[in-house]
Image (cartoon, rainbow over all chains, first blue to last red; front, side):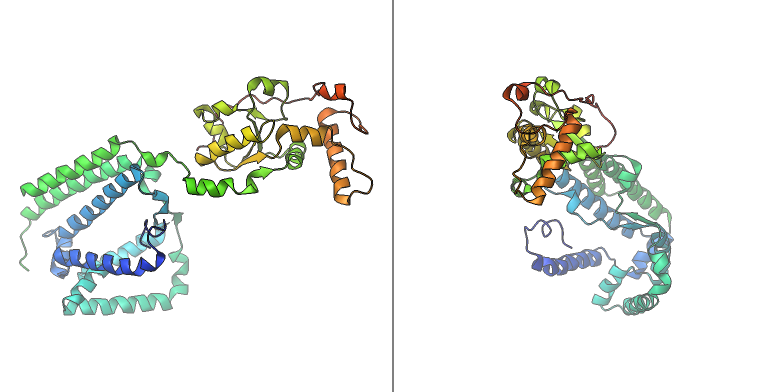
Length: 197
Length: 209
């Protein structure tokens, strides 16, 4: 799970869970620090008064992307050892819509809801209860969804490969797009009435 | 806009642009010495002369024989279908595609084992897949297939079968009738007339590395 040091044998496999806990704590700390435990802040993305979710997640993505590509290009990291989540096109689109609706309705995504629970927010606790209920229903009814769940399988594809460009060029273009989006979001935030929360 | 954010944004763009500039070392694939050690000790890379012969006669489309001897020796005699890549030009980029044809088994051979094995090791370090070495080289091939001695009548059934296979192969390669007993010395020295189908060195025929 915690690549690439464990698959490469630098750190024994038994440390896997220790790293999972440490990384989870770091993730939660940053989420809470960015104000993600507030459903009003998160929902701001959908109403246009607060784009911090977009900014934080995109910054994390491009930072990790640039860092990984540097490590790979100077030969410290073997890209092939990284786990790339396989793409199931149809189920990803439908799942994305379901997740998005839940996100906009509940004001949390799964990660931030646990952050909210940790600081004692009641709406977050209800959200997590709903989350587990959903997981339970999905698991019990899995045979019904199985066909959809496995549909549109594309393997572990990378956008850069599908577009036929190098990883570095794609990373550069994505960084430009992200920065453009940050400035655009800030510009939009100024024009939309600030909601106090 | 906060000045700090502008500076961070510029930093991110500069770092991303740096990716485009620095050389990509991940593309220079090279096997680590540890995996090389394992590979060198693994005898699975060796293919017997009889196996190669059987594949040549059977017209195995996956077989790609690679003759690593110098060109002048290759021109005098080579196994049918073999492509000449002299040992000193194994790493030449013009052969990269030939060595990386998907679905092909590249079998290196030289007169003995040494040169073919050296070529194998070089290609292995560059992570070329499906590479093998014909054990014993052309010398063993010639001694067993072309002038293989008849086994004693008390030999095992396997040995006798092998001998009849080799005799049939000899006929295939030389067109000669059955030669009983050891050929005379001058006969052996004569270059055997073999109808070699010389394949021109393919510059590049699809496939990638």
